[in-house]
Length: 164
Picture 1 (cartoon, rainbow, N blue to C red):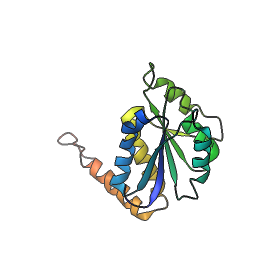
Picture 2 (tube, one colour):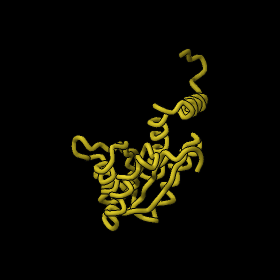
Picture 3 (cartoon, rainbow, N blue to C red):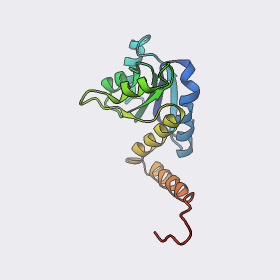
């Protein structure tokens, strides 16, 4: 963890920590501080409620929630805080995360949850999206995001003779 604590990463089960740590690894590259915790919307509802309601006071600016199967955690967090919530569907059921994807993406009007891809790719993209959100009000992070985009564009190799 580096930088000022700004992103809270939450998972419903310890078995999901390894996947969701990918989000933290991306945040590290931007110098964004983060924390990760295990709390289930079903088994520890009071803890989830308290965490969401204290998030802003604690300096968090974005919440990222990884959840599989019914995937209630991102929506529960979004219902309890005005902070942006990014949901990462996890492949913890026989449906390989498709059930979680549908659960997270189908939030009711007024309680949005940004939804990324299933699994590690989604966890990584959640870190990039959180950085882009924070970049709106943090110049240091904005510079880091811009530099990352330049590095990505340098990997493009158009055909010889192509003039953009």
